[in-house]
Amino acid sequence: MKRHWYDYLWIWTILYFSLGFFNILFAWLGMIDFLVPLGFAIFGGNKLFCNHFCGRGQLCMKLGHELKYSRNKPTPAWLYSPWFRYGFLLFFLTMFGNMLFQTWLVGSRAASLRQSVTLFWTFQLPWHWAYTESSVPEWVAQFSFGFYSIMLTSFILGLVMMALYKPRTWCVFCPMGTMTQGICKLRCRKK
Image 1 (cartoon, helix red, strand yellow):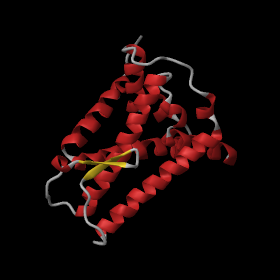
Image 2 (tube, one colour):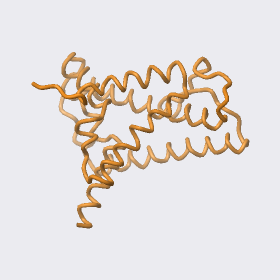
Image 3 (cartoon, rainbow, N blue to C red):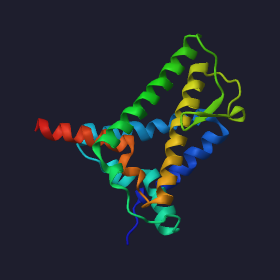
C-alpha cells in the first residue's frame, strides 16, 4: 500500500499535545484543526479533512487498529443518532462559547488569568509550569488554557471511545465532523 505525506499527520496530534504540555501558548496551533476542516467544507463542499487529513483520527487508527489497543466492538447505534450528534455539538459549542467568554473577561480585566487546564469541563488541573510571564497579553494565555482544555478533553474522549469500540468511534460524533457534515448538506441543498 502506497503511503502519502498525509498518512503521517498523526504525528501532528502528538506534537500538538506535547508542545502544549510544555508551553501552553502552543495551544493556538490547534486552531488549524478548527479552521482547515471548516475551509474544506465551506469552499470545497466536502469532508476531505476528516477522511484523509485528521491527525486525531489517524492516531486512533494507529493505536486501535495497528497496535491493537481497541476492543474493536461495534459502535453503539445511539452514538450515530442525530439527536446525540447534534446535542453533543451544541454542548461543545456552549463550552467553546464559555471559553471565549472567559477569555474576554481576562482581556477586559474583569477576571484574572487562570493557569489551569479543565478536563471534561469540570476538573481543573494546575498547569503553571506551561506558562511564565511573557510579552503576550493575558487574554492570549487564557485562550490557550481554555482551548487546550477543550482539545485535550476531546482527545481523551476519542481515546476512550477507541479503546471501548472501533478505532475511529470518536469520528462518529466529533463536533468538527458534525459541523462540516452540516455545512456540506447545506451546500448541496443550494445547488
